[in-house]
Length: 98
Image 1: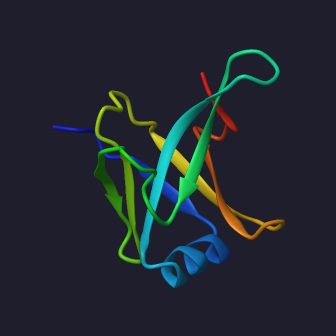
Image 2: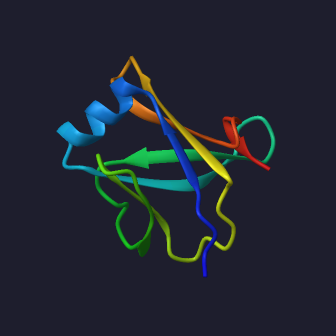
């Protein structure tokens, strides 16, 4: 059994997810800039060729992560980014995954 992940979404972020179809795909992406950082990416549609699984359902939206992701965070924060308007994800309060 997969442990529960707490999703903390700001009201504006939850509203944007709902307006975009009610699903948010979140996945780690390795950055080549500034060393080997892994950041979180989000989209209302899955990236091509990736398989996702349901990680959480808040009642307002569903959150999906890569099927191959072995470890879920205890807490995932979602905030609204402004330029461009998008949902930003923070794993355990961090902008990158360690």
